[in-house]
Image (cartoon, helix red, strand yellow):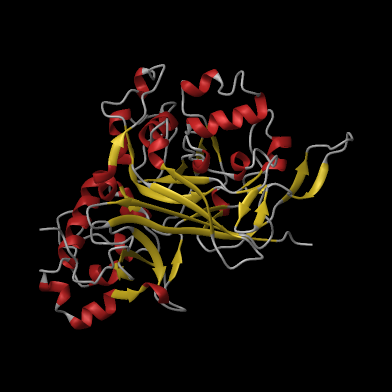
Length: 420
């Protein structure tokens, strides 16, 4: 019999008992942040469960990890503790388990309607790295900027290319994004343009949340890398394409990228995603031994991007893509990050880079969809080459199970004007 929760969960919900993603929330104004798990239209308060002594397994019974204002301590405990917590939560929430189901007072304290809570960043993010792991995105960008003769540079097929981003400007879904200002390429003169970005873009990404870190000088073996990934979030790594184009040679992105990155509030664990694992694309040439995995896999996560133009109330679907299209896997990204001895820490974020698919409607950013502004994108009567003030961008992601979904909710942000 399929696992079923005593909490009523609609079949279209992203948060059935098979998912149980982790987040951090405030149950009301003036209350303190605490860890929670999404179940249907509710947030299960893990601090209340912990205080009631319901995490009674050997790894968590004496832990205060759910009494913290973020998930960093819990994610640092590693996969055995994560599995113990998941087993405990699935048992407590199951339809045939009376411990929580029949305890009215505790149930009222633990289950908080999601529409009443304030969702916060789930982890304190110390460091953030953004990869460039989609072959389709890489090739499309290469054709735009270098031409079709040599769209993908030789090193891209040998290693997961990445740069270090700005952790301080990572914000939770629903936070407004202020249009950045900076220099753009000179147009008809030798003086660069300065002002608000004219080519503001979204980037459809996901990101790994690091669990246990590694010591400085001690790389993570490729076949142990999954044990260092707690789970995944949706991520919009907003980009100012004009600022980026002028600054990125020779050292890469800076002001064109560091003004804002939006993530979804719920971390979906690798355990919840495991039923949706799929073979990763064949890599040619074969990766060097330190990147060669015994089992190279991605996850079948359907991704969609919608835009609500400032002048409309309607959402327009602009992209359908999938995490399974990544060329470099999440575990290869992490192993490569540490091969030189770099130490990752609990709560660090590793972005996938823009996730584009092979079809014209699966491109992961406006740069690709409009060919860098050479053509217009139609949005139910409105048109766009890049984002305008007041536009809202909404990402969704979900896996389709047998009669249930494992989803990420939404990752949204609205563009607001630059300050005067």
